[in-house]
Amino acid sequence: MRAVVQRVTDASVEILSDEENNICSEIGAGLVVLLGVEKGDTEAEAKYMADKISGLRIFEDKDGKMNLSVKDIGGKILVISQFTLLGDVKKGKRPGFTDAEEPVKAKELYEKYIEYTKNNDIFVEKGVFQAKMLVRINNDGPVTILIDSNRKF
Image (tube, rainbow, N blue to C red; front, side):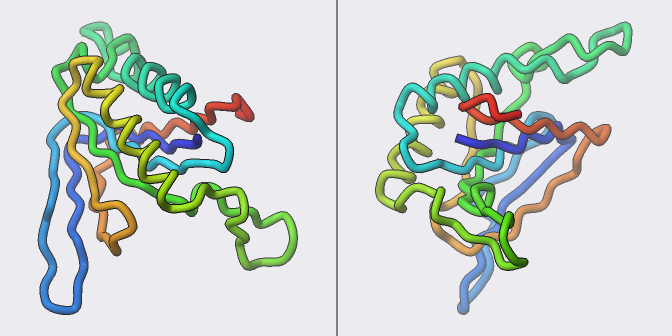
């Protein structure tokens, strides 16, 4: 699994359709997690990512040091599925997505990630899997962290 984690003051996700656009989820202070599921990922990766992100100490304490987690500040997490995080641009200029998991399995692991995060006593909002979405992110800092369950970076 691969994630882009952003510390936010607030964020929302709007589902785009031909008929109308609807905000389906929004949070105040917390994290936005853009989550990509890679072929071969299992529930173990979902649990690892949930625990790692839930415990990330990227919020400032009273001394201005990044020492607090989203749970410590009473924040929320907005999770958006994003297979494009697995885009490969080593050859040419058009990304290939052969490393991204098939939708049925990806959705299952996306939902497992959310379940594991909720088990860490964190309130979670989410986007709609495979929907066309407009994500509004007010990045705080800005603070953006990349995490890969295979520890590639």
